[in-house]
Length: 415
Ligand SMILES: Cc1cc2nc3c(=O)[nH]c(=O)nc-3n(C[C@H](O)[C@H](O)[C@H](O)COP(=O)(O)OP(=O)(O)OC[C@H]3O[C@@H](n4cnc5c(N)ncnc54)[C@H](O)[C@@H]3O)c2cc1C
Image (cartoon, rainbow, N blue to C red; front, side, top):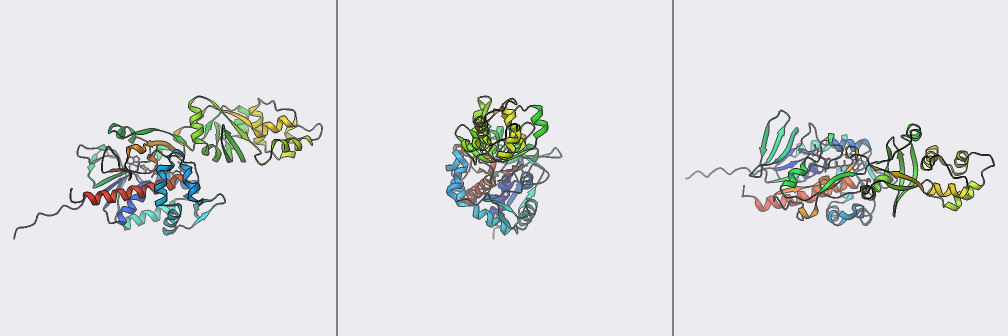
């Protein structure tokens, strides 16, 4: 009897980037029976995920999908099928399945009870190990060989090449680059014909040229429940005065509008320091101020305005507060602040821009490089904070994993 030639073992699926997007795709593919190898350039995985945990790890949001999906703005139609197929409820069930009880905050945001990411990541990595997923750290992806193998450089200066039945790039955006995602993939993919919208800071602070008085006296102060307006756009929440400008929920929520406005140069926002009261009502309360009372005392005692709010009004008027009740009320409702830029990408919570929808097929495979899929923050979608960022990462990872499984199935026997 003739000996049959030994059948080559199937090639593994390669996942490059071990943030939440890459790790979730690895889990799904390993569960579906694929051999999965994960690579990451850093000495340990999930560093940005762990940093997100320092803020409590807002995993997702409980609002109805009809409200949830519009959070992705102009990318809504692209993101919607991913979120429909792996919903916020699915993400909650997944985290609870890893032994992480969750709670819903008053704003509808979902957090692990541990209010950090490390216990979840530990349980997750154990699950991946149990599924047989191999993990190589310190391996930085630097491109593709002629034959389509993924090329890596290692910390000891050596290089290596790995072939996969399919490859997922889940390399993140470019915020907080020291945590691993530095956007170095953009020229590599651009060169092979992938359309990429330039990476920009999102969910990031804005810069203002504060006086020394405001900077030293109120840097770090929080203004509770105010409203920020930029033309027609408005957002409410807590605003933080920093030494270089402003940050916090309402600023992050206005990221797309602020980015657009600031490309043309400095712009003005209006801050409503008492959004719960109309101008008339504010003026009526101020009229009751006693003769001889200072303006600051009147604002504090009749309107309960906190010192940082009054400091911001002084800053906006060059320390010349209006002297009439109506003038003060108008200023409280629309304190104008000039902004001269966005804080840098280094400190942004997320990245806008990335791989353009036209450059991928319906399952996030690169049209320019069949067999190479992409997921997570490296795609060109943007959303405010509130759990929308991680949700899109997990949902896009599932979408790409399904595409990879179908691709490998269709091409098995060809390698
Ligand atoms: C301070 C902060 C707080 C946040 N808080 C929240 C929150 O509460 N809720 C929320 O929804 N989102 C939050 N985010 C955003 C969220 O963490 C990210 O959107 C998410 O981590 C992106 O996941 P990703 O897997 O796509 O990319 P990343 O998490 O960035 O992972 C990409 C991985 O790829 C690796 N990599 C990159 N380039 C290479 C290469 N060339 N070769 C090999 N490996 C490479 C990196 O080392 C990294 O491990 C926060 C972000 C920050 C910075």
